[in-house]
Amino acid sequence: MKTLQFKTTLKCSGCVDAIKPLFDKDSNINSWDVDLQTTPKILTVKGENITPEEIENLLQQSGYKGELI
Image (cartoon, rainbow, N blue to C red; front, side):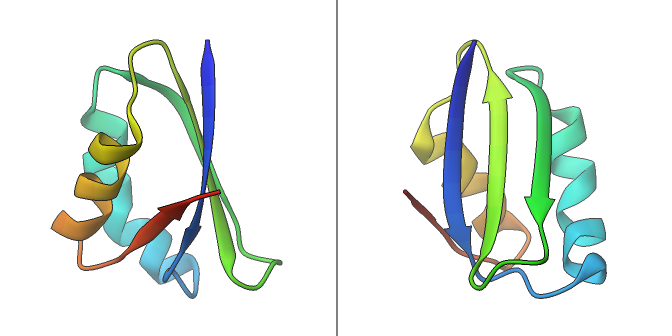
């Protein structure tokens, strides 16, 4: 399983709720989590066939940005 981490423009649990439907629906994502205690907020995504571009695209669809770290 591959693990990717992204610096994001997410700010709060409301932002996490906004991305939840897209991330939960994506069949390539096994699990994901956002650390709201860090600055910037770190999104960790685990899955078999995930790509950084796919995750960045999902964030953009919800109005947020992410950068692979």
